[in-house]
Amino acid sequence: MMRTIVLAFALLLLAGEHRAGAESTVSRGAYLVNTILACGNCHTPRDADGGLIRDRALSGGLTITTPTFTATAPNITPDRETGLGDWSEAEIRRALIEGIRPDHGGLPGVPLAAVMPIGFYKALLPDDLAAIIAYLRTVKPVRNKVAEPVYRAPVHRAPYPDAEAGFTKADFSDPVRRGQYLVPIGHCMECHSTFSAGSSDYRGGLGRGGRPFGPALIQGLGSEWRGAVAPNITSDPAAGIGRWSDTEIDHAIRQGIARDGRRLNPPMAFVFYAGLTDADVGDIIAYLRTLK
Ligand code: HEC
Ligand code: HEC
Image (cartoon, rainbow, N blue to C red; front, side):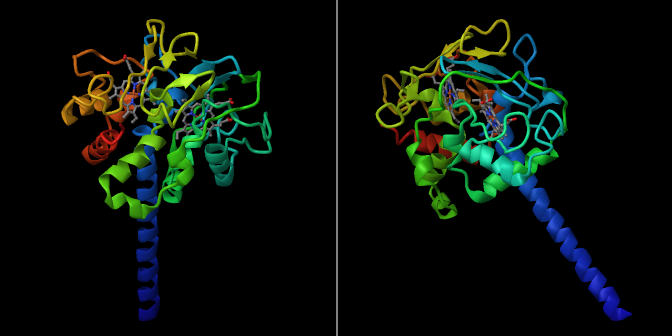
C-alpha cells in the first residue's frame, strides 16, 4: 500500500515536471515569435489603418509583390483546413529552415517564396526552433484562406553568412555574440542591408541600408502607408547610428522613435520589438556597435 502511494506520488511529481518543461518551451516560443522573430509582422492581418488585428493573430497577412513572385503570408494558426493543423512538427520545421512545403495539401513540395526568411532561421538553435513550433501549436486556430501564390521565377535567397556558420549555446556567455544571434533570427539585415538586382548584399552591404519599401512591394499595411527606406544601422558616425546613445537606439528598436523624434514607419517591426527584454535589446545594440 505504502509503496503504491510513494510510486503514485513520484509519478505525479514527474508529470508536474514534464508539464513545467513543456510550459517553459511554449513560453520561450511565444516570446520569440511575438518579439524578435515578429512572424506576425507579415503573418497577422491588419485593419484599414494598418493596425494589427490581434484576435486573428497569425491567420494570414501581407501580400508581397516582386518581379519574381506574388505571395501572401499564409495562415499559420493550427486551423486544420486553412492553417497548419494538418502539418506534422517535422513538416513545419522543414518549411521554416528549408523552405519546402509538405508533400500533401494544395501545393505539395513547392518551395516558399524568398520573402519567407528561411536563410535567417537556419541560425536558430534546435531548442529555439522546437519552442517556436510548440508555441505555434498552441495559438488560437482561425479559419482564413489566403490567395494562392504566383511564381514567375525560381526562388533565389542570398545566404546569410552568420546563419550558415551557425551558433551554439556556448556562444551566449558573450553579449556581442548573443546579439549576433538575435539579429539574424530577427532578420534585421534583410531590410537593413544594401539591395540591388533582386538580391541583398550581406557582405559588403551589411547594415548599410538603402532598401526601399513601398505600396507596390507590400500590400496590407493600411491605406495611409506610403512606404519607408531602411536606414544605415552600422556604427558609422555620419551615415549610420554611431553617434546615437544606447538609449536612443533602444527607443528606435522598442518604441519606433528615431533620434530626431520622428516616428518610424512599418515595416520596421518596433510594435513586436516592444516586448524584447532589456538584456536582449542591450545585446543587439552591443552587436550593432561592432558593425563598421
Ligand atoms: C517578411 C515576411 C515574413 C516573415 C517575417 C515570416 N514569414 Fe512566413 N511566410 C511569408 C510569406 C509571404 C509566405 C508564403 C510564401 C509563398 O507562398 O511562397 C510564408 C510562408 C510561411 C509558411 C508556410 C505556410 C504555408 O501554408 O505554405 C510557414 C509555416 C511560415 N511562413 C511560418 C513563419 C514563422 C513561424 C515565422 C516567424 C518565425 C514567419 N513565417 C515569418 C512571409 C513571412
Ligand atoms: C521588415 C523590414 C525591417 C526589419 C525586419 C527591421 N527593420 Fe529596422 N527599419 C526598417 C525601416 C523601413 C526603417 C525606417 C522607417 C522610417 O524611416 O520610417 C527602420 C528603422 C530602424 C532604425 C532607426 C534608424 C534611423 O536612422 O532612423 C533602427 C535603429 C532599426 N531600424 C534597427 C533594426 C533592428 C535592430 C532590427 C532587428 C531587430 C530591425 N531594425 C528590423 C525596416 C526593418
